[in-house]
Image (cartoon, rainbow, N blue to C red; front, side, top):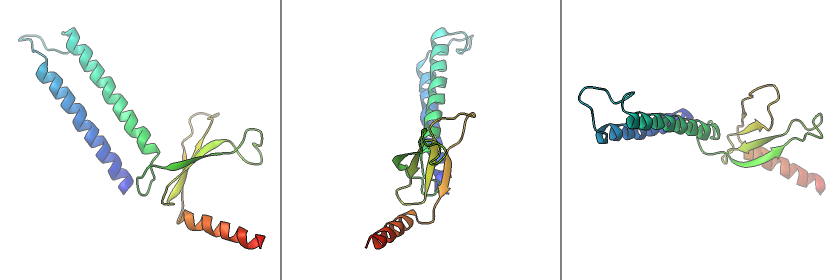
Length: 145
């Protein structure tokens, strides 16, 4: 729920900012009494094209930021860890980067190289990751004693 709400809020704020920039451009640029501005006025058409490219860039940055957020709490994923190895591909697995939610909601595994086309990052939810990690470390210390 928070994940989608955060994305909608981010897109909404960026949309308001971009449309206010377009409104400012339309207000400050002088109008011609007969011809429309877009397509006939070179300066206005150039600025409108740059505004469109800026809109596309802002939307892409919103999508890129959303990709590296937790699917439960919408916080930024932290602690990137390199996993896998090309030299031990069959035993360890393909190399990639794994990000973790600071509150233990899950991990995001992103492949390093996409051989067979574009692969999506894989989100693995966890009930309580920190309890799993602490239980594993306490079992290891008990074995050492």
